[in-house]
Image 1 (cartoon, rainbow, N blue to C red):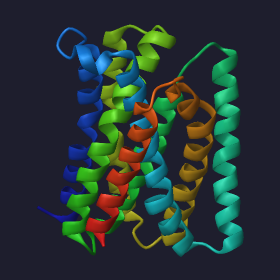
Image 2: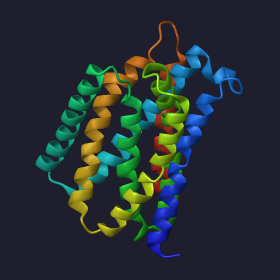
Image 3: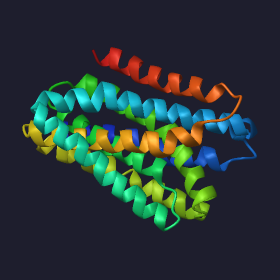
Length: 236
């Protein structure tokens, strides 16, 4: 296989967990305790912890390596402002898509970085793909429930959309491979995504995860961040 084919395959592997997470959330009769009230909030918080790990350990550090301090602040702030506006528009129309937006903001730029990484560190590329896949699982689980319960979209429509979203990873990885020398552009995309994720985490995801007199959700957030730390340590 060529390096480009490897990058596309790894990104596809990472994206397959998106519909899998949706299917797990759909099977209420098969996994009843996953759908217990506190467990649902714990999974939501776990996804939030994973997103914070992606910001602090992957997106921001790699983005800052490519840009000046001024460029870093500009790209990060632009991401936050753009997703503030998008979130406001969605809320006005009665939508509920914060977890889905956060998942895509995580999945696409990390797949972009994956494509750029394959040219120099193939083994690290496979590990990064596995970590992206592990991140996508709780995020798609939560996004499915948000879209079907809050936005009241049909289950089949959401699962079909999740299946189509899988191809975004290989597309982003292909672009990242082609633009592996355009480090400033890739860095700006990662910082833009980081700003958007941070906004969505504190505006929508963290408040939904909170429960009175329940300690599972904050521990879930810690567990999600620890997953990111584990992956960061393995990647060196």
